[in-house]
Image (tube, rainbow, N blue to C red; front, side, top):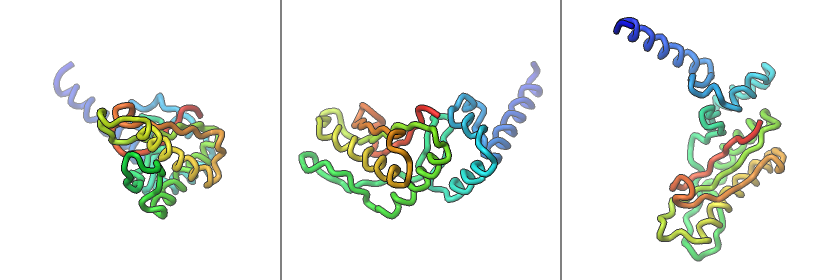
Length: 179
């Protein structure tokens, strides 16, 4: 192939990806997504509901990672190792708004089973059972909140992944494992 043909193909691929983004479709590499194919099977009314939820800009569907991605990290109050490992939202109102939208998506994808992962930014030398507990408790706090919004608890599983066992950052993720 000549350079002009290659450049033309690259430009066309870029245009297709941009068009897919505008149509709320995943990039080409994400077409193996469970969420993407489950969305294709939804009614037009359910798709419109998803669009309305996503327009609030609190959550998004991450087709590459099969996840309900929170646009903002839910913050928890800082606590010290050795104290009671309670997971308390810094802003309950903000957390509620984000998790309510996540729950609404899970209610539309009514057969989806998810794992809610609690991660912490714990250095290896400090990693002990307390950090596993706080990571798990943060995941459970998110899970209980989603359950309180109407999602059947049998579809939700919480796990704690502190430090290098997970992402090494303070964050909670909602991953779809089955649809």
